[in-house]
Length: 132
Image (cartoon, rainbow, N blue to C red; front, side, top):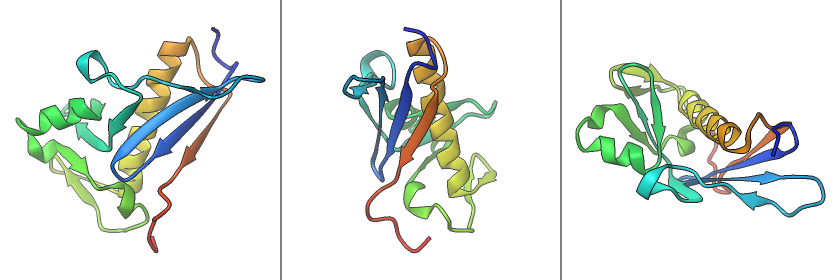
């Protein structure tokens, strides 16, 4: 299937992230995120930013937390809009910046799996988003 033939929906939750592609005339199709044994249509809302800037999301990020906990961040979704930075590996990130890393990660993974970029992307947010 060629890229540009689909829209990508990304559901960003406080604890989990999922995605689906939607093609004209067809129901939405969930996308497998993660890789290997951690491959699933739902991954945890955990992000690991490596020293080289490499971004890992979900269970792979959780696994890296054991060896390098300062590079893993959770709880960023509820802090979008908060001006206090989150420090990841000694580098300050806004919660919106961490969210952008996650969205980019999902967009890139889906584009590789589907064979090209989406015609458009829609991102949801948790129902209980606070005042930020």
